[in-house]
Image (cartoon, rainbow, N blue to C red; front, side, top):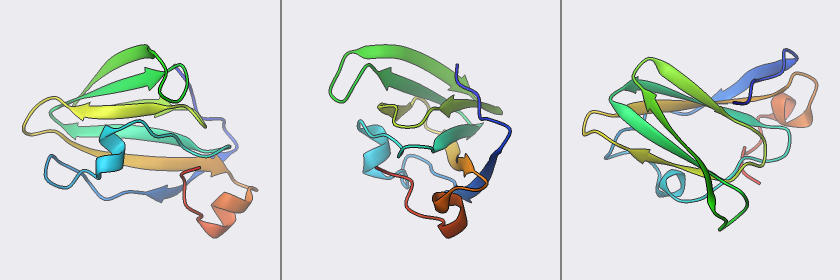
Length: 111
């Protein structure tokens, strides 16, 4: 599994999402832009992370993430999430190199 480089900082975080508030784009294939890692932190319930070989590609991995655990999605990696239980809540934290333009200007994390 990916890890966030030491020189990267958390430049942006989402609000806490649940079944009623999760943006539709997160439950469909999407990716982060070049140089941005996403850390998906599950607060309650269970979430399933699907990673794809490429856009509209084959499923490369399926990882179940339980409450109080997290998963790192590397830059430009196609993925989606599935909320597995009614009580699932999660938040996404975005990391970029501390000297990068995106960290300085808090740009949109999507490519």
